[in-house]
Length: 356
Image (cartoon, rainbow, N blue to C red; front, side, top):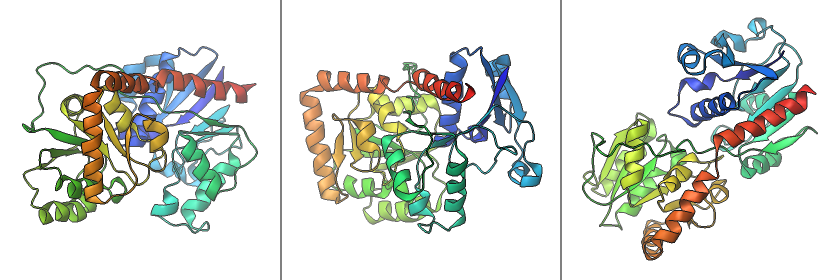
C-alpha cells in the first residue's frame, strides 16, 4: 500500500495556528476513512494521537536532530507533505513533495533580503515541490510576489472552522467574567496582532470593556501593550485572560458584543470565522487575507486612528442591531462554509494526483 508522510510535528502546540492546522487537518483526514493509501503522523508525543485515531494512521516519533542531513528520515515514502512552510525537517530522498504555505510574513518580520537563510530555505522548499497548497488566495499572491514558483500544480484550500458545533454548557463560566458589555479578541500577543490599537480605541468607547485572550507572556504584552493600557488608565477595563481552553473561548464568543481583530498580517485568520459561528459581528483590518476570509458582511478598518476605529465599531454595532436576525444568520452560514472535512478531501485529491 502507498504511504504518505505528514510532517506534522507542529501539532504539539495547539494554542497556535500551526498546531490548530495540523490537528484539524489530521482529524479531517481521519474522518475521510481512506483505504487506498496509509498516512504516517510525525509528532513528539504520539500517545494522544494513537488514543484518538488508533490504527487509522502509522506513527513516527519526532526528534529535532532529524533536521540535519546526516540524520534525515531514510524511509522512502510515496509522498512527503510538509504541513507548513517553516518546517526544517526534509526527506532524505527526492520523492513527491507537497508544501502547504500559510503565509510569507517572514519577509516583513525577519528579512526581505532573499539571500537571508529563512528565505533561501523557503525557496528551496518551493523548488523541490511537486504540488503547492495555499490556505488563502492572499497567501498565494504574496508568495508569487516575492519568490520563484516552480511550474507545478497549485491549489488554494481554505482552512476549516474549528468550532463546527457550539458545545458550551449553560452553566460554564470562566474564572474571569466581565459584567459590563465587552469586545473580545484572541491570539498570540505579538506586534503583528496589533492589540494595543484596540486599547487606544477603547479610550473612545466608554460603554465597553475589552477582553484579550492568548499567550500573554511575551515582550509585546509586557511592553507596548502594558504601556498603552497604563497610558490610558484602562487597567480596570482591559481584561487579559492568558491562554484559555475551548469552553472559555466559546463563552467569550457567545457573550461578547463583537469580535475585534486589528491584525496587521494574516495568512488566513481563524478567530473571525469562529466568532461568526456564534452570529457575532466582527471588525477586522482591511488588509492581507482578512477581507477574503471575513466576507462582505464583516466590518473593516482601513487604518488605525483610535477615534476612527471607535466610530467604525459604533456604526457597525448600530447596523448589526438594526438587522440582527438577518446578519447573525449570514454570519453563521458564512462560518459553516469553512469545513475541515471538506478541506481534508481536497488535500486527499492532491495526494491522489501525485500517486497516479
